[in-house]
Length: 288
Image (cartoon, rainbow, N blue to C red; front, side, top):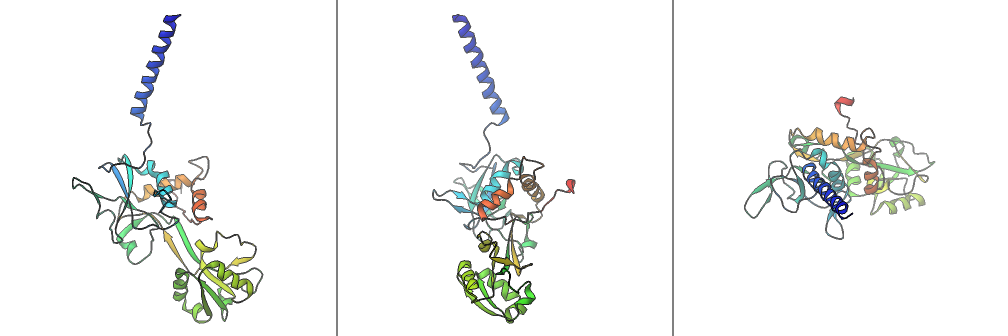
C-alpha cells in the first residue's frame, strides 16, 4: 500500500514537471506590458491624454479605447517583440524615426506606432505618415426636432442654428453658404442647445456625434442626412511601413465573426463612446 502511494506521488511529480516544461516552451504566460524596456519591447507612443481614446484611470494606469484595442490585437501584430510599453512623447514626435525613450545605459529606442486620438487628414500628416484604415469617425451633424419642416440642409436657409463645440463651429465656418444664410448662436453644451431647440429658440443644432449620439433622444430629434465634416482617427506608423495591413487585418479579425464566436470590436467601441462611433470597413484582399 505504501509503495502504491509512493508510485502515485512519483507519477504526479513527473506529470507536473512535464506540464511546467511544456509551459516554458509553449509560452504559457501571455504577452503583456513590460516592466523594463528592452530591444524586444514594442514601444507605443502617445502625445496626450484624450478621453475616451487614452487616459489614466484613478490608479494612474493608462486605459481607454485605443489602449484596450491595442491590447486585444497585440498578439497578432507583435512580430518578434516579447512585450510592449506605452511611452509619452512630444507633440512633434515623428513615429518610426525620433527617439521615444533612452534607458540608464544610454540605449535609445524608437516607437513603433502612435495611438491616442491620432487624427488623419490634418495638414500634411497623410503625406508624412502611414495610417490604418479609419477606426473611429466623429462627424459634424445637424439635429432638428422630429416632425418639423426641415428635412435637408437646403431647408436651413434663414433658420437660427445652435452651434456646439469648437469642432462644429470650425466645420460650419467652412460651409459658408449655410453659415451666411443663418443666424448662429453658440451654446456651451449639446444639452443646452437641445433645450433651446425644444423651446423653439433655435431651429436646428449643429454638433458632433461624440456629443449627441450617446444621448437617449432617438424619438425627439432627427439627424439630417450627410454631415458638415468629419474627423477620422487611426493608428499612425512611419511612412510606407508594410505592417499597416497587418494591423488592419488584426482589427478586422477582432470584428469579424468569421474569426471569433462574435464581434468583439463593436461592443468595445460602444463601451467607450456610448454608441457605435466606428466606420472601420477594412476587408482583407483574400476575402474580397
